[in-house]
Structures are given as structure tokens and as C-alpha cells.
Length: 425
Image 1 (cartoon, rainbow, N blue to C red):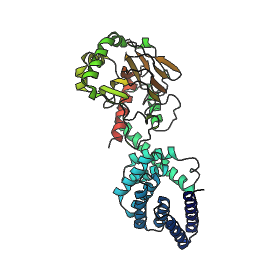
Image 2 (cartoon, rainbow, N blue to C red):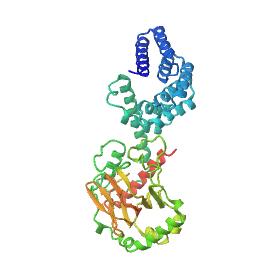
Image 3 (cartoon, rainbow, N blue to C red):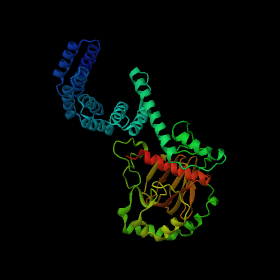
Image 4 (cartoon, one colour):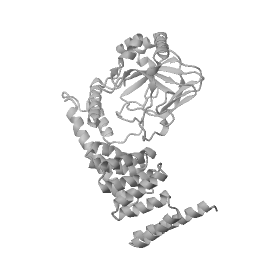
């Protein structure tokens, strides 16, 4: 055993004994044990953290903060130390420093459930219940099973559930106030929309498909739709060469307009997007984005713009339609994921497809063929590969799910706009 291992073992035993002494009310003994640990390792972040926690529990917030700042000087990449610093700042009433500390903790470990809980309670104190509910939901998702049995955590989890329920109730009332009154008709005609809201507000569970935003019930779970049901795509296929030519000019003259398709802020739990986040390996040249045309881009692609203008695209003010050239670099994999809502479907019009490019939706995998469009439900798990030595390019468009009635489309659009307005701050 090395001298370092021996020192660590001694420090661990001293801190453990100090914690037991402190818990039993022997604070002087606990302080003496920690002093011994500090003498053995004066710069140890572990020892500094232990001293800081005992100081914090003794009401010595200033001393705790100083000790934690010293610990961070030795190890600035410890999410636990940043979290402890947030606690000390909170005890001092320094909300600005508390916010910085908890954000640093989550940036280092986005799933640190205690930091997520702290962030949620911080937002509650800032009178931001909507954002607090989002962090409470993340906290509930990240609490490990071993911690869920602790009484203090059980109380926190119930507080989280109550906050989420209150936010959902407020959101439901807000949505109802924004939805236009419908003329008298068979209640069954609105049943699917009501089911849709029940799912969004957490009153009903979704199994499959698995959208990340809004699930509309009783729509068929079809991986690839029958191409014959979308005759308007004939024009896109017939003009593949013209669309491709416009794309090639874009690649030559306006490559700066290509942006990473995946663009999450730092500190987000990226999961499968870690390798592609903010990377142009999967790039997008937007023609329509969040319901608005990107005029400078459309001006460079007049034929494509005309085809889009005549197409029956999804229409949600501020949200849809979206249309863009999707560019996938050689030897790049788009990992399995699901889309936001089954109220709209996704169209691919392949433009540049080297051999070795394939696409999976659910259990079915296909290879793109230039000029052959397809339509799929992206709320079913899907992924893509470009195993070639050349870029792959497609035109990607979203369109309404044809199984929605006109009334349902109007209601979905109004509800989606209301949800965005409710959450906008």
C-alpha cells in the first residue's frame, strides 16, 4: 500500500468518526477529529468539505463558505463542493452567489439530484413556479432508488409532485382560456383532443409511440407511411434535380448558413447527443424555421421555396412548419431518438445519397434513394447512418398527420401556441 493510500485511509476514518461524533452531539470531539485530518492533509478538498458541512450545520455559514472556496481552489470540478457552496450562500441570503454555485454544480453533473432539488427550491423562492416544476420533474427522474427510501428525500419527492401538480393545474386553466370555443357537435369528435391534453398534463401515460412533447391518442403508429397517400410529393420528386442544384449552390456560396442541428446549452443532460451537440457533422440549412421563412435562404432556393409554398405543411404559429436541408457528414451516426409530436409527420426528399446511407424507423431499415421521398412518424424510435466517404443530403419537411381532422389540427395548433406562451419567460 502506498503512502497516499495510507493517508487517504486515515483521512476517511477521521472524517467518518467526526461525522458520528457530530451526529451524537459531541461537537468538540468532532472538531478535534477534523483538525487531525486537516493536519494530516491541509489542502484536501475532502477534509475542507467535511469541515464546511459541520460549520454549516452549526450555523457558521461564513466559515463554511470560506472553507468551500478553499476546497474549490484545490478542485474546481467537484459538483458536490459547488452544491455545498450553494447551501452556504443560501444560509447567508446571497441569492446571486447561490444561483452561480448551483448552476456550476449542474454544469458538472446535470443529473446530480440534490443540485436539481436545490435549483427547484431556489426557483420557487424566486417565485418562478413554472421553471421550478421543470427542475422538480428532473429531480424525480434522477433520484436513485437507494435514496428514495430516506425520509428526507421522500418529503422532498412529495413536495416535487405537489409543485408539478400545481403547475399542471395552472397550465390546464391557461390552455383552456386560449382554446377557441367549438360549435356544438358530437363530444366524441373532441375526445381525442381531450385525451391529448390529458397526456400532456400527466393524467394519462404514453407507451408507444414516444414523442418528447405532445402525444395525440388513437392515431395509428405507422413507421413508414404509404407514399401513395401523399400525392403532393410527386412535384418534389419530379424536381429533385432542381432542388439538388440549389443545394449545391448553397454549399458553394453560403456554407456559413449551415448550423448544427443539435444545439443544447451547456449543463443539459445530453445522453445520445453528446457527440453531435453543436457539431456541424449533422448540419441544417433552414428554409423554414419555427413557422417562419428564412428569407435570405429562400431567396437562394427559389424552386424549392415555390414547392414548399404549395405543400400542405404543418401550421402552428411560432412553432411549425420547419423545412431544411439536412447534411450528414461521412462516417457519422445519428443515434436512436424520438421526435416531439405525432400530430405531424416528417418527410425526407433524398438529394445526395452515396452508397452506405441507411435509416431505421422502429423495426424497419431502409436505404435512401435520390428522388424517392418517404414519410414517417418520428415519434417512433429512429436513427440514421452515413457509412460512406461522402456527405449525405436530404430535404426535410414536416406535414400534418393526415389522420387528424381539420378541427383537431386547429385545436392542436391553439394548444401548442398556448403551451409555448405559458412557458415563455
